[in-house]
Amino acid sequence: MKNLLILISVCFLFTLQTYAQTNTVTSTSSTVSGTTSVDRTPSTASAPSIMNSNQDVCSFAASAAIQSQVLGIAGGTSVRDMNCERLKLSRSLYRMGMKVGAVALLCQDERVFQAMEMAGTPCPYMGKIGIEAAKEWLNNPEKRPDYDKWVKENAVKEEEIVTDEGALGIFSVILMLLFI
Image 1 (cartoon, rainbow, N blue to C red):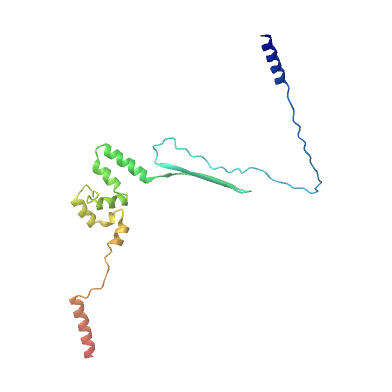
Image 2 (tube, one colour; image 1 turned 120 degrees about the vertical axis):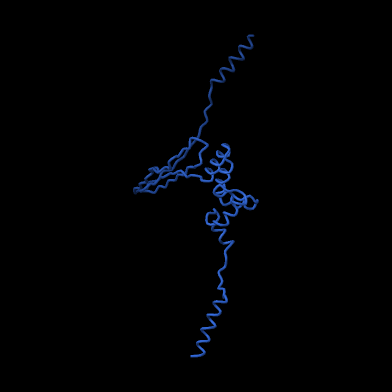
């Protein structure tokens, strides 16, 4: 027991001693004449944070800032995602039992419209479905969401067609010129 007390005392004494390390730093100084002024003012323009507090929102935030030595500009906005809104509205209509309305809403996107056409199930048109809707889309192509593309694919080339009446008129003019 006595030995243990001596051992603990010796360990305690060694822990109280600190050994300093020495570092030698040598510096050389020189004299420079003149003045230098440096403006270290931090930039003040910072992009505003725009928060969407709900994850079930069909919009996203965008912000930006730019700073020069003299002027700083910052701005921000939120952008609506129309396709996300269309999907959510369609899903709500479907859950309420309005299946044709849900499909009609999705058909406002030209990709869905073309996919439905390729599948042989045309999009609804003014309450008509199936073959009746397909006929109405043919009669009113300007109401299609892909109208510009449809016009390019189905463009009727205008050609001058000479009919019998036109040929008779041309022949009579030539005949009159011969008699004069």
